[in-house]
Length: 444
Figure 1: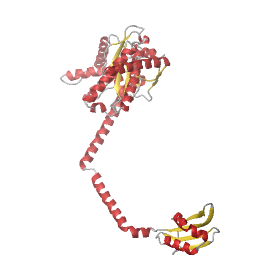
Figure 2 (figure 1 turned 60 degrees about the vertical axis):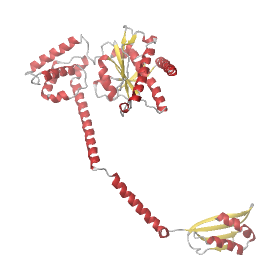
Figure 3 (figure 1 turned 90 degrees about the vertical axis):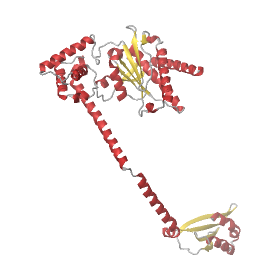
Figure 4 (figure 1 turned 45 degrees about the vertical axis):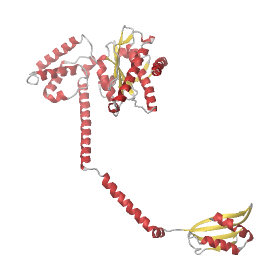
């Protein structure tokens, strides 16, 4: 508006024609928002003051009027301030309508969003089930920890003492069926003895132990321990660090936090599992061609199911590095699965990250529990005796689990990296496997 006023009044302002300036300024003061217009010459002398309310407060806009490079004057335009009362007086139907609309929306939303009694009951049941599950898990972990502390001295040398076994037998006798229903997570001679006692008590007509004195219980414990030692052929405990490593088991599990695999349609799940199976078998074939792993062979053909897959490697001679082969195979598959997973996600296809564990046959079941409980995606867990750790010590670096809660967590190690030679070997084998995959896809 100010720029338009200057354009119209430029000639009159240059000639200082007050009459023409007044006519032009009066046309602009007819606007409801304009309260005052003040036109000055180049010497800042007032030529035309126009306005019905010169004392009214408002925003003032000033602009210099020029003709080419010469300043011929200035124009100041004052706009009227609109009070809230005037706004309400002019727009009261809209304000009241808006308030009513918001009130109606608030009432409708409160009615629709209010949970029903069935939803409140279902939510209460879910909270109770979750609390009960957490309580049972904490109670189970505490019981396993107490059991491990009670047998800590006997687990160190692999042979339980008679007094400890007698105390456990007496505890199982007093606990009855409640102790039989509690799951044990410590795989050692103590649990084997308790399971034997449970089987005997279930087949007995009375359903309870018949020992009547502490001496009878000790005799049964000693005889059971001798029977286990004779059946195992002189093998040491599962937690013994002095046993030899003749074979290792490599376990591959999917890191499926939300159980997506079981919800996947068979038309998509089965081809994906077949791809993982083919990838793992080709990785085994290509890896065992390495001269470093001479004398190591696979005893089974891996096959992926919903719960993962496992490969058993054995040493054909005393010089074969079967523990190193297991660690390299697990790391190799994690590298391959990382590439396949990223490619599938890029193409908006289903894929899952993986985690792996390496152990000997004696500790395969504890390793499964470790992978399910503490294993993270793209992580490699190692649970081997001293002989196996010695094989891999010159090639890989490992670190222990922070704040372990069980014996197996304390003995478990996490893969932390490898030397340049091993990583380069794994990269070459990975490329060879992927080239085979590409050739198969192009042939089909």
